[in-house]
Length: 180
Image (cartoon, rainbow, N blue to C red; front, side, top):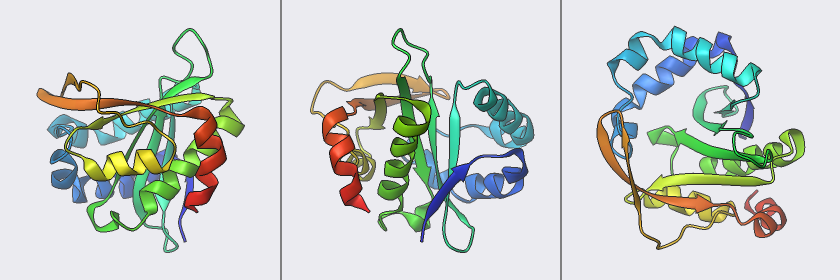
């Protein structure tokens, strides 16, 4: 069984282990976070918790029945745009947990929390063009993955080609219950 919970500073050791264990895997689909991220992980996490406390971001851990971190789902830019019911969604799941439905389930749970606990009615995500598995997760959870012109952005010094994926609000909130 999979469940999600909010990130706490006490998760530092386990989350760092998860990130290090999957560093090469994550870097294959999006640029690496860089050595500074890992050597200053305690500070990074503390800053993330401050952003979470201010309501600018929300970080969730996806945990299996043994309590192991299998992934994380993040909401960011919460209400930063003109209409306050908005946020961006990002996620990453460990290599050994991919292809098992964990990401789809956890993303759907976070989207449900976004709507019912944070009053977010518009989510968007970006997905790397080559990351077909992540595109499928977004499609299953109510996002529109289009064939539109990809956007190029720089992340940690690496150019990434990505697709913008808005959430299909009505479709999502009626359909995400079906992924459980």
